[in-house]
Length: 157
Image (cartoon, rainbow, N blue to C red; front, side):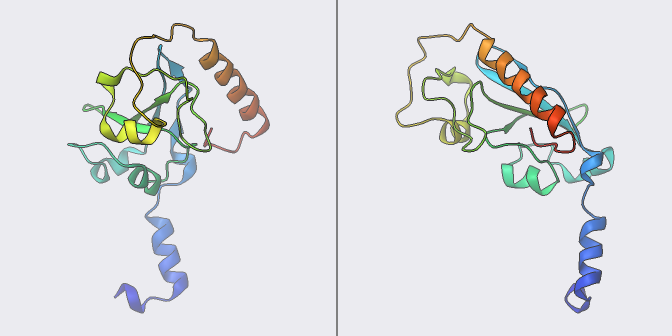
C-alpha cells in the first residue's frame, strides 16, 4: 500500500510520524572528572519506540529526531522514565570527529567496547592519571553558552 501512495502522501506520512524538533528537550551539560553528560527528553508519546532492555545506537537515537554533535553515547537507561535518554562523552571530545582528546586518560573499567572504539585513538591508554580539573569542561560549557546565544534555534550543541 505504501508503495502506491504519491511522494507527497509518503512525505506527509513520514513527517507525521517523526517527533518535531521543538518537542525534544536538551539539558545543559554537566561534568565529573572524566565525562560530560547531558540528558535528552523525548515526548512521552514515543515511550513505546524506545528499547527498554538495551542502549540505543547513534543511528537509532538520531532516527528518533535527536540532534547533537558527534561523540555522544547513550550510556544508561533511566527505567522509571525511558523517554529520558542519558548521554555522555569524554571531556574535551572533538565535536566534529567524536574522538576524545589524545591525552584523555579514561576509567577503562567503566567503558563499554563500543565506547572504546568510538572515543579512543590508537592503543588503549593506562588508567594512572585522574582528571581533577574541571576547567576544560567549564570552558566548553561557556563556549557552548556563547554559541547558543548566537544560534538560539540550533539544538545540536
